[in-house]
Image 1: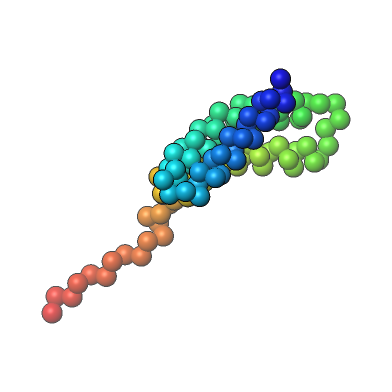
Image 2: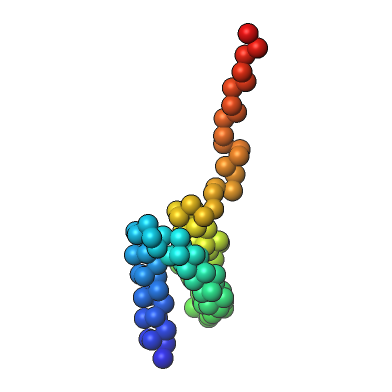
Length: 104
């Protein structure tokens, strides 16, 4: 059974990636990939806790799990940003102000 779940999640990721290449399916694929990343986050947390509480924990375990969990929100945001559904959260901070018209 675990092999089927791994295969199914891999197929979902590949289908989402292919969907990002097509303008007609871009937004749907982005939403699907973002939802997928949200849905697998609890499994990633469990995997991290299982790895970090094991008796043979080493530095590589921390180097793998901590960034993976910390970057999960970016993985949710990235396809939505790539499809134009959301913008950069700080976009207003980087805009240059419009020049004021002269009163001449």
